[in-house]
Length: 453
Ligand SMILES: Cc1ncc(COP(=O)(O)O)c(C=O)c1O
Image 1 (cartoon, rainbow, N blue to C red):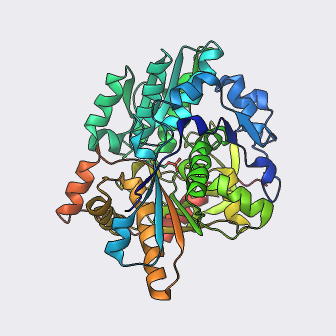
Image 2 (image 1 turned 120 degrees about the vertical axis):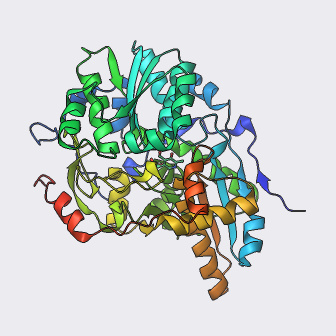
Image 3 (image 1 turned 135 degrees about the horizontal axis):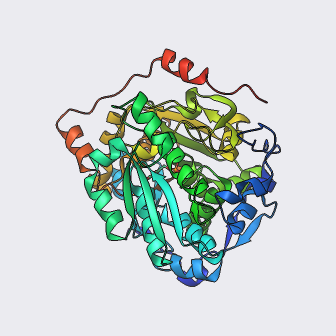
């Protein structure tokens, strides 16, 4: 009898997050202040984030306890199932074993709720009543809207214009949870007005939406804080609940992965699954192939520069040493809106730079082809972002078929695609475009990266 779902006893859910910083093979280059370009003082972040999250940004502790109220929120959908993809394996006729962690079962439909609940909690206990944020695909905005409604807080979401138009029901979902949703760029911020005046027909980008959300928090006189859905250490930290559960689940059936795969926007779902396994590679030299998968339309890790850059287009965030395509790079309007980000988390960038992890990039059509195979075998309809991880997992399994190796492959099914049906419609009717990214466009955006470090 096939054991499809490997479930974890709720009593065994990990009660601390894993912080990779002390295990990194080289010190993490410090974030820089956007005004002075000098190393940032953690107190400079106080205008945007509450003390609990700032502490996690720079903490040297390897494990950080998950507060009881956050554990309680997690119990609404965690532990999530680990599933063996027997049916997909059969379709591929591969000797590889394929496992995936199913984060689509969260009420938000993705992994994003793991950090949204934690961020809402730390803001709430510091007396904050209102959060502002950006969203690309709508998944992060949905997660923060749900978390704010759980902790009885107000929430304003700047939604990238192309997604606002492609996914009207995502907007409605956020409104159901009480959030205010604004199409970005907008007339509600000085930065949004400037962009609209210069580029009235822009598709928008995560970089622009972040600038708008930050401006609202920075000008609120301390009443409103800003919340980010990826990239920063505290976000990656909160997501490590995924990999820690997966480790326990795999161990419970005597398995351990040879390959760990995740799609990569800012890096949080990939890091969330990969970092707890990376601990074994960094501390004990365990052989694991880590693959971050990105779109060819936004190839941050595969074609970007390793350099200090801003996290947003308006140059308001601290600068992180990361792989970047340039802070004002606007990717084509691919359907994986959550992967349209010019930069990536500094910890992940460092691990790719030193060769502990690697990255690959795909066009969207082969990803949707993989999503169709996955839907028709595993019965879960994946988000366009997650389809990138599925494509890579399938390709790794097909390589095993050629070589005869029976590798164990684990990937993160970061979210479902129930609000992405325009994308599937386009794919099914042959209308989905694969955007070739000209090196000149990358060079032009990279020329604007500040010359530091
Ligand atoms: C389902 C899903 N997966 C992945 C991502 C990419 O973000 P990250 O790289 O932070 O996991 C997003 C972002 O919105 C998403 O919605």
